[in-house]
Length: 180
Image 1: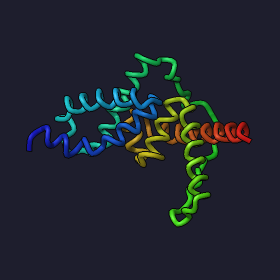
Image 2: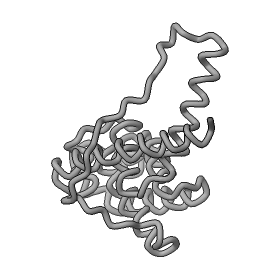
Image 3: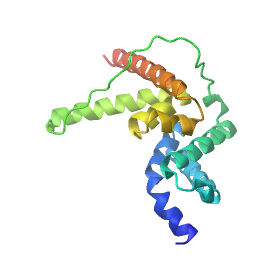
Image 4: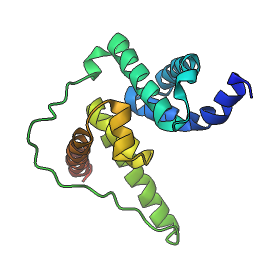
């Protein structure tokens, strides 16, 4: 099997996850496309180093690094250092999901409004919290995979998730108060 066909078989299926992460990092579809394109070029260049490991976390680590490089160059103000050692009281937030059986128009409208509210709130979070929330909640990666992608200990991932969820909850509360 050629290198290209092997790359297409192992890496290309994760294009949607790569774009999703890049989109949340850059907060812009066009910029995310640029990041993903650069990340795929890098991934292909270093594909021989993948060996037999899972391509998805490997690719997302490349997307993450490419995204941060892009942000440093184009929007350095978006990169905020996270104080992972600071204490922040945190409650985990669970965004309610309605079962597929509940599909009347009112429920569908509420789901859409809730999804929009959560997405807007997520956009407001610092990129470091946003990325771990996206990888965990939207891409369903394990703590271990997120730690490997972000290059931080699992405890830091857990801490950032907890703080990110708390910040997300606070932003949603503020937005809901403004809306009422």
